[in-house]
Length: 278
Ligand SMILES: [Zn+2]
Image (tube, rainbow, N blue to C red; front, side):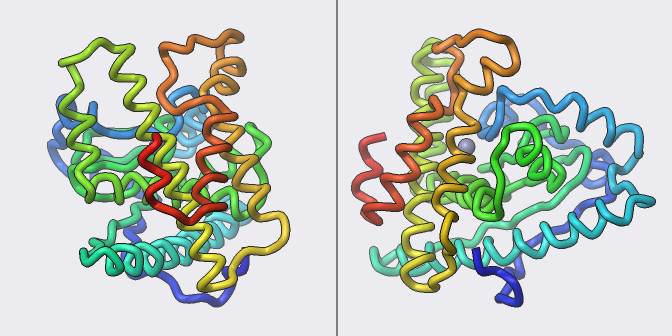
């Protein structure tokens, strides 16, 4: 992806090097926490969490290489965020509505949001209550190493997926999902959650479609990187890696094939109405 020296978003809140507990007092863990859409439920970032805990803030102050890599990732993330802002503004404008830009919070170790307290083990997530996307940059490195998803566009896909949840929130879909919680069986709820997740993958594909057409930012191999990332984080593959077997009722994001197909559908069609199928 072409991203160097491009415009960055002003909506990035850098909380790296700060402990989550110090940031906001009294986050409401509980009801709000259940509406957090956790991007990666099945991961096992125990190693990462341990290393973050052992370095205290997680900022790894004496590791220059890590600091430099994170600085580059932070810059990359804000360029991608700016691209999502431009594309979603134009899509919302076309339908006569106004897109409200989300904030991207970069954190390390743990973070406090309006959805409660989250450790890096949570993975990237979107909190509908404060309309912010939360990403631990070291997670991206973990994705690369552990899941085999490589390349910058794989990371762009992750950010675009979380921004997809913000779009869903603006369209009222998050409230609909939340209202199901506790009123339907866990299995039915999870099925709806999978639909929401696949639609976010689809919306990431829609973004890639227009980002490429209007900005020409994609390079050869980028779509494959995103597709590979989408496949890498399918529930079936994650569950196989973490526990050695697959429990379909516990799926909350969709299988690797479903996630891959959802992204590609958005990317290839650029047609929002195709997203109703999820
Ligand atoms: Zn998600």
